[in-house]
Image 1 (cartoon, one colour):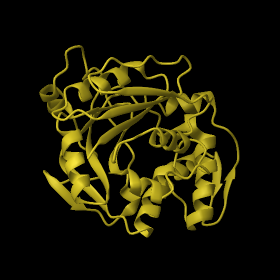
Image 2 (cartoon, helix red, strand yellow; image 1 turned 60 degrees about the vertical axis):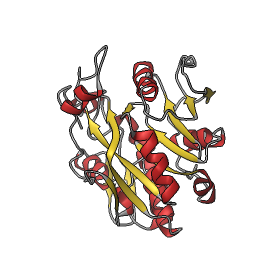
Image 3 (cartoon, one colour; image 1 turned 60 degrees about the horizontal axis):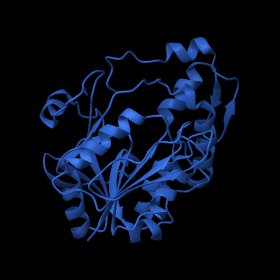
Length: 282
């Protein structure tokens, strides 16, 4: 079986370089790397020992569903491993994901350990990143192997794999989700309803490289509102409730079981106040 690694980049050249370096060090390098580039200045194709390809997507926004589908459309591998550009794959991730997908026609999430500012320096080592990485506070993974996860809402798109035929059968990500937010939750629920199990994989994952974070993510305010309404029309309940509730506390929206009303845009001061300090990994 062949493995395609897919990633999206928008103005994250350093993160992309570290992702590629992680793949170079892999015990089983991918058969190809597909990069969908949405950057303001087009990225150059990386130098690798395996085939790599940059696919340009001209956009002012961050259309994640469209970009992931575009990456998959250019992939030739039997198995797909999606990695967010801020993820550095562990040495054994491509190999173990490939093996897992040979055994299971499933949606498989790999564990992601979060790094702080300055944890990835020149000459980084996997051992050093392991020493600094922190597990996600909500999603728990087995030490090794695969664990079924009954809650499809816990699917996350940072580092996941599935068979290319299964991705196609599911119709890919729903491009009615036009920007940031909820497109991955929708995909997880559609996989569940199609009988594709969600598995959490331990023992090999990725490291999340630190970058500036807003909590709540006010920089994606309008995208989140639009995608939340799309999700509600499809599923009958609100996604991203933590973010929507935070918006409501700020007086930006009014929210009930059926309606989400935009009251005003966040101010510059509110956006700055939401910026998390560099020491915060999540």
